[in-house]
Amino acid sequence: MSKPFQKQASPEKLKDVFKDFINAKLDFKEIRNLQAGFNPSPSVESSFGIKTLRLKGVFQTSPRKTNFDLKYIPEGEDWKLISIEINTKDQ
Image 1 (cartoon, rainbow, N blue to C red):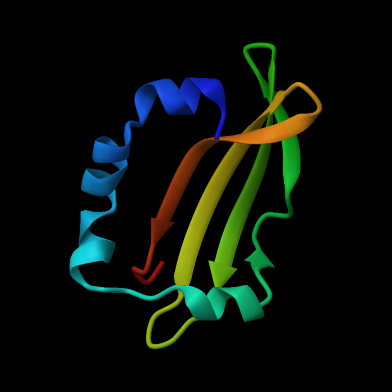
Image 2 (image 1 turned 120 degrees about the vertical axis):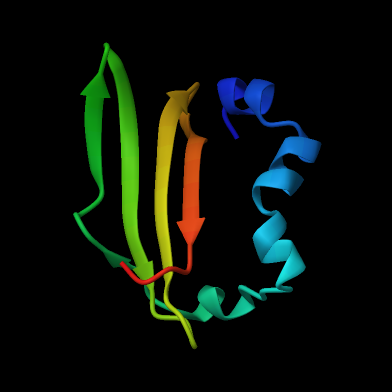
């Protein structure tokens, strides 16, 4: 995770944000073997002079698909997570 993300998201806050997944005991292990469908294609955008790599798409999990929207920023020579949205709602 990027340094700004770490400053905003303590382990307790992350646990609260993902509590619905935790309470439902959702298991995302099957995602490891699935191909992500990207829509739109992964891209690097620039906003306020900051480059952001965006990966948005879906995994065809069952019984509901898993939608994701991930954003990364460059830190050193790596891209680090700055934003994450995951849901299993039909879109």
